[in-house]
Image 1 (cartoon, rainbow, N blue to C red):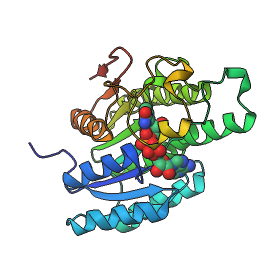
Image 2 (cartoon, rainbow, N blue to C red):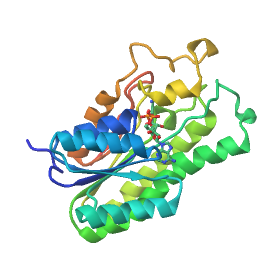
Image 3 (cartoon, rainbow, N blue to C red):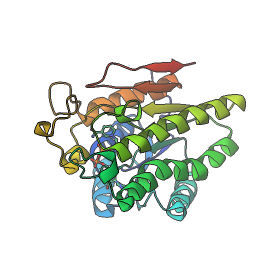
Length: 255
Ligand code: NAD
């Protein structure tokens, strides 16, 4: 069966690396036009060129998801160049170099950065893109990358976990609001466990720091696996919360 959004447009934030990059390659493979957004412009430009060489249509944008004006410009770019957005992947995220510090030891600047990027980044995306998608009156989809840490708080960074809990709750509220309006827009909230990308390495956390379950082991997923699961969930047009690794499988699906 052809992918539900073949020939249509996806905007992906945090597309330069890890899960965002894997999503970009997987969606390009399904014939989607892409707008690749990241703080790291050079890398998304390189990825865009790589996809173009394979026959895809792609734009790159230097976007900071924590800046509402930047995100609004991203939506305008997709409108101008591709006539709108059908799939928004709110994927950009950061993790503090926390080494399992207790909650009271995080600085206010660390809390602010985490909330501004991981939580408000998603809010900014929804504020700019959902009204446009509703106005299009065509089928659309919103994919929010939360985390298993958005379902349970363990020894991992508490500010990170709090920001990701917010993304899960926002996704549920979004789903309810869209259903009430009978909008043909699906919502997927991805809740992966550990994925082999730059973000976890950047956290500085090591197994010997004592966070059971948050170690690179046989349960660690590759970003391509997360992209594959995301595409499956998008095709099903549902609110979906799922974990792929260390935690018990927590799969929630609502028609
Ligand atoms: P990654 O570090 O490989 O990729 C994150 C990307 O987001 C980078 O390219 C970075 O430049 C970009 N980014 C960071 N701040 C940004 C900002 N303000 N505006 C725009 N772009 C920004 O990490 P990843 O693992 O691919 O992370 C993708 C998403 O997956 C994140 O939301 C992360 O929290 C989530 N996640 C990751 C894991 C994991 O174990 N890797 C697990 C669960 C959830």
